Length: 262
Length: 217
Image (cartoon, rainbow over all chains, first blue to last red; front, top):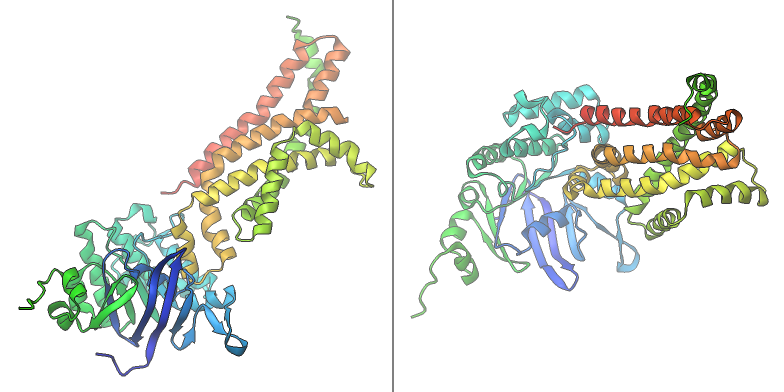
């Protein structure tokens, strides 16, 4: 079930509250180098919050997140205390973690090419020619080389999401997070985005994917994690989890009949 | 009506000189007001409570006071605390403080109108808050607030008329002087009106050009 590779992502006892409402109630999760893990679960189960906590866009309350061995968010201080990392340190760590959002969030005032070149040039201080070369290669990879000069508003939702994926890849992230990236798309546009993600899977990218696309999860995932109520209920290889889940809650979510007790 | 073309032609050069002073005051105050407004707007959306509170106090204070009061207060008040500024400097200061308060609210509303996902996306790519503001949020906000900023610029040009009370030979003052000198109202004031319009209408044209140029496709 778990790969022997060292963990690219390591989450331990993660808790997060919004006011009095607990959203994450103690998450433990590992993602190995090159592994693709898919998180499923009902709305409000904390899946998206988990992703936002991993790159500390949402500060978590307690627990630990390590990406490639480095803690993110909080560092150990003197005598068992913990210190919130500086914004500069967080920026550096976030640059190595890609996240693709449900709503694309492309920069509408920039061309597609400029969207891809912005962070590599401004954050990584790449030269314009190096950033351009890499951006064009990535646009070719997602099948949108012809749209380099277009503005996001001129693209379909599926095309925008492929650009958003390429924009993340431009930073050469060690880990990519996908937050329901096909949920805002018309059904006929879902396939082109999933095809790009399958390609990334074949390239060996480490991915943590929140999705409602069960067929895709079954095909692509090395491991499927089922979350409910801010907890991981169970996890396992897709073949096992989708056909013979051990928890009643998982069976209910997947619409499987509960074995009779008689 | 006492319009007289000969008087109009005779006083027009003096009015033109006054219009130049008005234009200079407005231009200086607009630039400085934009600086105040940008800083104020950024402070208004800051996570720092002190900055937010200071900016809010600035806006409430200035918007609640007549410009004429601020102008006279600075003109007569600053020398009493040992700060000696020329009349045009006081005028630009008063106009820009006032203009800056309104621009602060325009900048704040512009920033807040940009989808939160834009800041999240920028930060997730490793951009700092300042970099994300400068490269992602403000350029989009600027396009949205061009129309209200243009309105403020026009208001600013018209507000400069108040500075005639502190011995500055602006357009209005030149008109009043010409009226007294020639004992004629309509001839100089026709020129005053035309020259104010010559200052304000181009701003609307500039707004139109900028809106076209920075349109988001």
